Figure 1 (tube, rainbow, N blue to C red):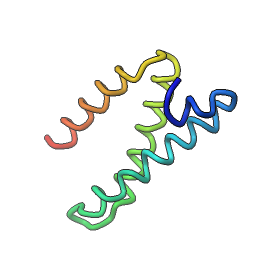
Figure 2: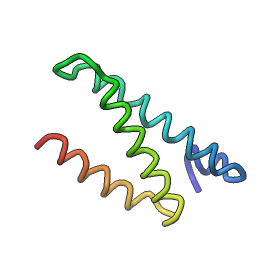
Figure 3: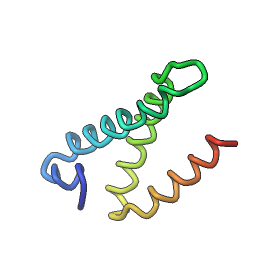
Figure 4: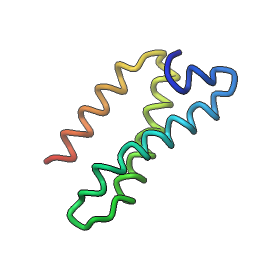
Length: 79
């Protein structure tokens, strides 16, 4: 496995947790330009999605499904 979860392959909970945290923190910048100027909502939602992505990639052994889910989520956000 690649990425943060792969780095912690002997500690999958830590790997998933760090991947989820990083995904949420990465979305601080887009959230900071939200109309209400309150990025926490996007960060919490991103953290939940990051946990889902980590779960899916761990159980499927590939990131391709997470790419598809992320793309669909992005389209839903802009509608």
